[in-house]
Length: 348
View 1 (spheres, rainbow, N blue to C red):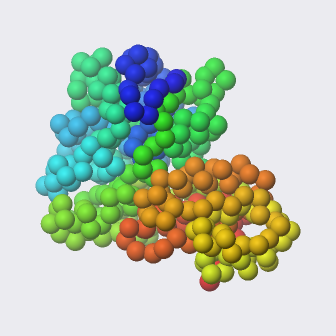
View 2: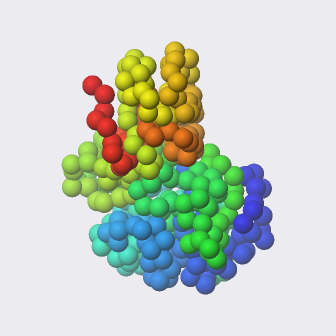
């Protein structure tokens, strides 16, 4: 359903709310990526999310709420640090993993004792959540939503990506797709939990460790994949993956790798100065990566989709710079490479 990236259309929102109330699925924009949403209080609607995505039932969903006042309806024993993060970063791209309340069902939590909750800042998302709450007479209503794509594949940052992956009924799987323009940030929210008496990042995002540490007044660490932290979206080893093999290559070794793969058609994502040095006949598509972590993240999923749709048989991505600000980008690329078919080993 058509909308605008800067003006929320009340008629579009009303229709989408009606779909949610009927137990249907609505794909909607957030500042991170597009979500595939259902009324969190309707178990059959929530179950439909898993069927549409092909998502394992053990993988929990994130609840999207209108504000901090709604959290107590879904979670309990909320830590002081969580309240500090809500005050500082909500609405925004931050998900808090909290002890679950009775309203958060096993289907939402993946059978765990925790639930992920976030308050998106995107105007369309806010209008949809508030519209659902108004229609139900309950301001604490929530929309359960993972990203609106096939499980494990590249997340969508445009309505067109959702249509390509899932489609809209009657021929597709989604009852209503809201076109709210391109997602502003382009990668998923930072996810934190408060297990073992510490604030831990379970999934890096655009809010980094230093920002979180300032808000809570203590050090924040990155949880490794080997920890016993709660299961959350995006932490399986292979995720955000294109359908074609994706290989990560050191920038200084990219030209040699391209030459070594001749005559195989290649799609390449690398800094513009690295691309300028490439001279090969087997380059199906070359895309310049963003120079800052924000620009890189904003365009990443759209660029990976363009490369995946090209004539390339293999995708090469030059490693981006390192540093705390780049952690989320590295996380997404590492999982995309691990999840792509026929993956080659990473460069030395």
